[in-house]
Length: 165
Image (cartoon, rainbow, N blue to C red; front, top):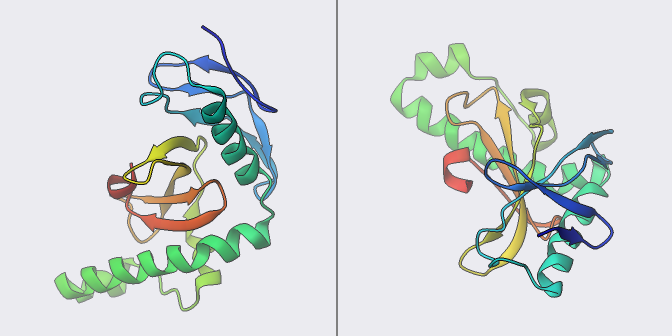
């Protein structure tokens, strides 16, 4: 069965999730395919569900850099501060030698490498669609950084990949 997202196009089945064709992500200046987790939608998602998924992808893709950064940098910075504090409590020498010093939210991006495939998934317990994106960061190489945006542009979360995925 072919699933089509309004204004996005057909989803292609993949190993675990369905995928969109590559589409421009404005704040990155490049194209990405989006993985879509349809596990909780039944055999064929209904029209409101496909519309909600499409809206989430379109909204996320259309964010400019300033808007994306303003939305997410405070949450990413808070995650950095949490990791820094926890590591400093365990081993202050390691923290001083290996973790970057980041003084302001806007500076986190110098230490983040964005992933190649955001995941659109249903968030629990509120059952709203979100874009969750696995990234790498200099302060947490083992667990990484995940950024999630509800509806593609609100309620940013930043935490370890283990916590968000």
